Amino acid sequence: MSGTVEFERHDAQAVNSAKLRQPLYAARKKIFPKRANGSFRNFKWLIMAITLGIYYLTPWIRWDRGPHAPDQAVLVDIANRRFYFFFIEIWPQEFFLVAGLLVMAGLGLFLITSTVGRAWCGYTCPQTVWVDLFLVVERAIEGDRNARIRLDQAQWTARKIALRTAKHAIWIAIAVATGGAWIFYFSDAPYLAMDFATGQAAPVAYITVAVLTATTYVFGGLMREQVCTYMCPWPRIQAAMLDEHSLTVTYNDWRGEPRSRHAKKAAAAGKPVGDCVDCNACVVVCPMGIDIRDGQQLECITCALCIDACNGVMDKLGRERGLISYATLADYNANMALATGDGAHDIRPSLVRDASGRISDAISTFHLGKLFRPRTFIYFGGWALVGVLLIYGLLTRDRLEMNVLHDRNPQYVVLSDGSIRNGYTVKLLNKIPEQRTVTVSLDELPGATMNVVGLDHEESSTITVTLEPDRARSLKVYVRQPREGAKSPGKAQRLVFHVEDKSSLDSADYVTSFESPE
Image 1 (cartoon, rainbow, N blue to C red):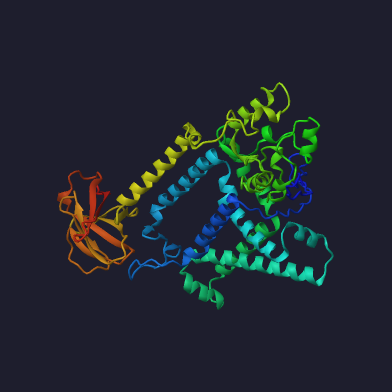
Image 2 (cartoon, rainbow, N blue to C red):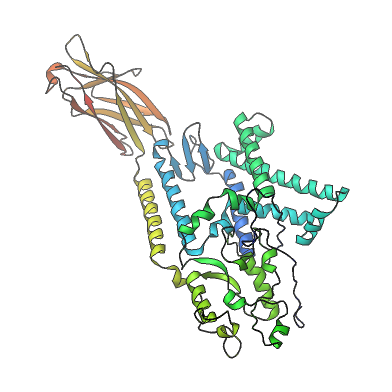
């Protein structure tokens, strides 16, 4: 209570307080975060809906690739060694495209962190998303913070057993759905779902679902903030990504201190009073169990729920929002210097306000232009360069490829008529979902002809081969050259295999050698 303005005060202490941090071996103290309301909370709802929707629904999206290819939009087809992503098909030898996407993801994470801190952790990390989802279930069944605390401390009764059983049952159902959705990325979803339900799926499917069910349930339901604090390396790595111009969730103590629960009495006594009324609203909404007023902490995932909670209190008090806000270290230091007279004295709230009592125009505030700095451009440039290279590689990749392997033993055979024969294994890759006929010819080896094992044809320098849609075909080819055709007996000659599809004009060459005796 402050005058006639009512707001809720919370008797709460930060479980993971930087001032009271427990040793690593200490038992976990439960956190019961209160539901927050505000723009950042709404944004988290939106991100949660989008990410969960993408994860659970993507395997069921269909994409017509013709009669000879799967119609699942996103599919990791391990059996046939293919990765399908809508109109993109990636073969094993093109895995550099996936590696490039991983590099882009890493650079993108660096870019986001250097500009807006741990936004990935606060909004899109799977651990954060599933913890949020589990908390929705927990609040729906057990109530908000105070009700959950009372239930946790109460004796075991039929009601408590029923509530806890319902909560954990739904958690397990969500965990099973999470594992089930994952396996659908590796096989045709409708058929696998039917096989899985009838017990006819491969054992690896059940093992995968069991493992992901257990990890989702334990990490999202039981361990929660401990995963982020103790298991995830990113809180410790992020420090290298941040600088004084990176946005982070910040308690502006240059405005909030000295804090007081009895601001009017303190002001009447002539004491300096900040805007913080020590209501602990920021503490009770924090899913990590920290007090943002303790300063920057590795446990903070910058979810900004404390900003929503504090803004709600400031609105009720009729004060400006932003006591807790996204701010840069440079702005914070400049404002702190103003509030303390460059460190000459303690914080004086009067120094950051004008004669009307509003926040002074001398206070440094954030604007989008501050995001554009050398580090941001470097990260973005690297990210964009990798993206351009991937697009170029995707647009210019061959749809018809050939690989040739020369026989090692023997390297050559002298036939009865004196001609020389070399053996090769020729692999032809048809990368389109259509059957096509190609011609394979020999170049740069005078008088050379070839014979393909298992193919009914006359020995010549050119053969015709049919390739199945989206398949590789291996041919055993013997190349023969009359002895008088050899330009330099005893030395390896250059031989070029050429394959071409006359209808699409796709072609490929492979340079190898032709061995002969001295």
